Length: 212
Image (cartoon, rainbow, N blue to C red):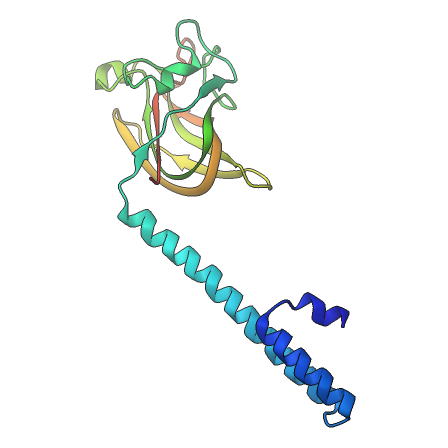
């Protein structure tokens, strides 16, 4: 009875009633009871799996059909920031202003982090590297070559991490990265182009897009 109580499904419940009656009457052997219960549990599991699979398929279709909508962070912070180049400049809507860490060099391990007012389904990120969209100005400072994207969600569980590899060119670079219930993201510099003494690794703008 304890085992049957955990198999909370209509098929299992019906089988249980029938089998209890049959066993009490001595008309069905225990091995047949076990066989029928196993079949009922299997059907229940298959039904649950189909529902979960259908939900994922529906989400995947909706993700492709909708027009992603921009979402602005409620706050922005960084591991460090150079004078006149604070973290908030990655979300000011301008690609000719930028965040840069306090120290020059590769910037490895430095990060900028965006926190949002509520959970949303992340679809795309657009990242503008460097200090400007103009090529000559773009080359004056270092640019990220690899960023680690870390996402936190409103659901229990650990954060998710993935590596974004960027081209060394001015202008926006789009990354498709779907995560449900996002509340915070962090971009950590792993490697950079054009680093050296007196040159800081800069990120001009980070645009975040959600499913409406």
